[in-house]
Length: 584
Image (cartoon, rainbow, N blue to C red; front, side, top):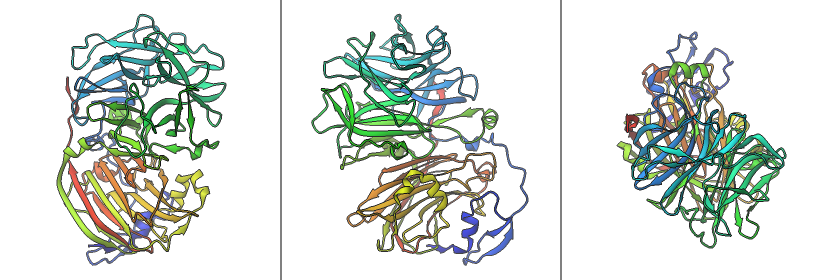
């Protein structure tokens, strides 16, 4: 059951790397404590340890990977294309890596689908999308860095559609099909075309990320045959609140329906559209309507301060790409999670970059935000379930989760509030810098309701740990829940980027007394989904204890003044998937 833990709060949550060398640490079986001196900095094991390599996330066998590009389901096979440097661990000399799967969990690696071998992409085969036209014809449209230093858009088609793996692709003879030659355009800020959709006139449409007159834009183009394109005289949408938009994504959603909608099919009445863009090292989005008369996206809410724009993920997650999975009638989104060590470390490791677990994505019933959840297929890796019910976490309590592989785990916890009367007041200014608020309100700072949550990848003496936690605040008309993923004590390594990520979500606690948390732990990757997927945070961590093969611990905790019940806590060990180990 729960154990009192106030005696080592200073050890567990003293986050500054410059704090005193003396701190509270350790505990005995009866909850006792002792004061100990932090030992001199030991010689740390090499970051090249294979134990940092993920066991069930998508990544190539070696070298650099970034954006997912053109994911598609075709003739019974899932295709994952990705930005890849086959010759090193830095993001240069990019080609389209290619892997295939029947379950989105286990992947066969193939030869690159496209390499830099024409004047239109000699400096890089960059991000793009795959669209199925005429019912059965896949077409890739992608950005190339051309010999003149411009960013241009090119197309490619499969050489042999009867090949189930679509191993070979032929570039179009009329490439490039789009040039950055319109008024207000920047030659080197024109990239990442979207999946195509049918416009109000029956013609194909795509959007391309751009900087237009110095502002961020999704430029709109149309075509009869997907081969020859004309720029529409207005963008799909533009905003003077930001500069260049990378990796735009545009797709329909139906409020409260977790099924996906196909861009190329008729859109049902009541549907909304999502416009996603990548900027400020994060993926942001707007919800609105695709106005058929205007042939433009009209957001429901226009926010001039982009710090307030909604995010797909509040952690290390960027350049996401979604696709409609016709096999199961859902929309799936993938994102790139970069390493947060140094480029020199990546050279030593021999690899850099993973993709987050594929997620089903849909619109909440209130039409205000997207929800995300790991695809069901990932549950095929679950083993050795443990189940705890009716736990009670009082102020300062800690409950150790045992009996599973704490390096590779899937944990689902429901936290039930015994009272909402002691919620601290919400300050809207926190929304402008949520990470700052997570730093200032870490798990050692006691609140009215919270912090409560999980401590994962914790070393024996708690010098290393990652904390995923909630706090509940009372706003004027509702309750706001803060979710943080705090990495500041995740590793003894000093050269890492270890922020305290965070995001807010609104919840009606008078109707919904439980707050759920699901966390997927995969060695150097921690993905958390709060409030049923209202806030998602992907984190990258490199505990020394992991490389040292030490025992790694996991806990549920509460450090708020209000008691929190845990009606159910379920956790599983996760098997290792076959990811790009076998050549297809």
